[in-house]
Length: 206
Image 1: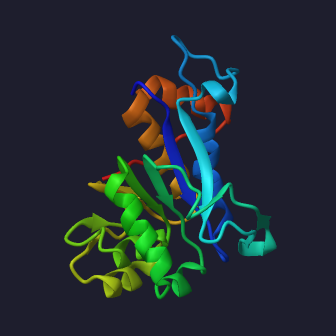
Image 2: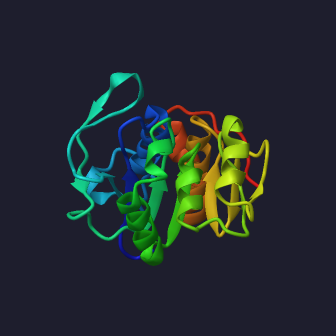
Image 3: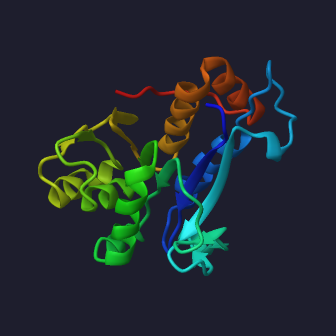
């Protein structure tokens, strides 16, 4: 990786806070320095992380947390790594043609496509999980199969990589994010990032 990757995290009304904040923290704190130095400035990070919402206006996440996104769909830079989180807000978005179309367009040029929790439902609606193994929050296994019955739903996996990377619910997105960091930069960088944020890495994908 010669140039920083743009990491775009979709947010929306009703998004689960840890679904997007967990990966945001992992990716924004990843550090690469000839050796390792977690004190390096944000401008030198190998990943540039930002949030994207449909209109660019403030969204209200679960629990009432208000978040102002960095970009709307129209102003967002190209995205190399797409993160689609979940939350109860995913249900109405299944019928939002603009959001599904944006996910589809973004996925065409992205190097990596990921979801956390019920964000997998949106990827499925966009046709990105057809014929693939995938997982989601345990409470949404059947819902995922209903969106696309060609998906092989992996019930119980922490995260699954089958072209697209899908994770189980909420905190599992942190483990998924570390797996992405490790695949891009190696175990040493992933472990150093985990040490920096004092997170005990656990769980493995399939």
